[in-house]
Image (cartoon, rainbow, N blue to C red; front, side, top):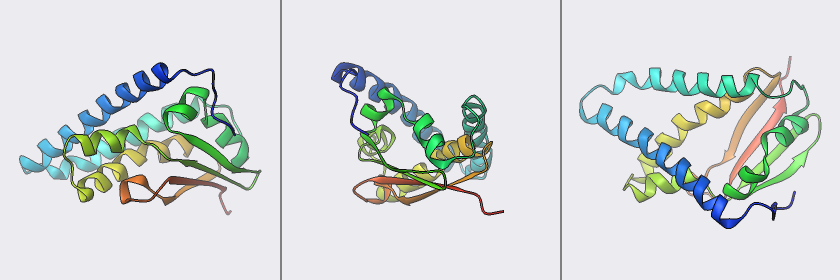
Length: 161
């Protein structure tokens, strides 16, 4: 899938900035919980982020195809913002790679350590897992920018029943 040239760099930058702002919220919330000794509240945050993703997922078209789900996930704006590429898309498995993540960039700009960035990414991925939860599909992350990989690689596959 080619990057959509109709989405301007200005639109890309505005969306990245908005995502970075929200990522900063998460970083500051987690840092405050940690500093105040209330880090045990983290599971509630993870459940809330999962639920947000689930609500987004139930608004997506129904499918049991990994490839169709992946194609439905990728939008022209998202494709440009995250520098996404649909590597594979068939009924049983789909692979999406992206080489830019505004969340990771925000956390790094805010001074998060590598360990903190990886932890924040784990929390944020709850939304991705929530988004796929209404479908008979599974989502795994083979690579993560937050872990220092060159891309995030999302693998969508049919659930084994």
